[in-house]
Length: 224
Image (cartoon, rainbow, N blue to C red; front, top):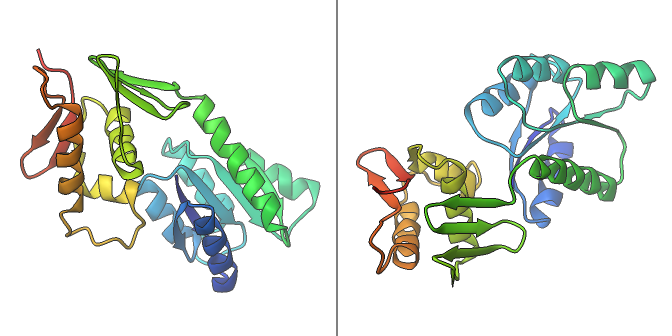
């Protein structure tokens, strides 16, 4: 899961980032609402955690802009304001939850997990294409009813391809999904993992599901 933390206080942002990474989340940070808006509009996140009072653009303004651009990513607001009106304003802007500073990190993690669970329940628990099946609850992948053992990284790449089946996915998008924002986009590691996936999924089958789109990226789709 990939999370964006929008927070102008560097120490707070660093604290949240470190804690979330210890919980095995991929975390990017933005130092103001304008930067957060740009990241969220051009990159894909599973959750956004944002302060309200920030330079250049407030968290409330950022959320309104995101929702007006049909970005439905769950958003958790963090703020020192704790009046009922402030909470209502935050939720009415399009936020999904609200946490007042200072907070216990355990509560932050609990709210993060709750929002991510809520997001996942809106998705199908099974992803399929042709005779390939991924069970997101059991964390199993089967082709023609035969289980395929994948590494966590292979599983993550395949899940992203399946969620975008019949669409071309660039190498950059795959890297952003599987690694953090600072990962070297010039590396060929994605190509290496795709080759490993092909060896496990498409070997000895008449239909090759994972295809290369030269100069662009990859696509998973059914073959006639």
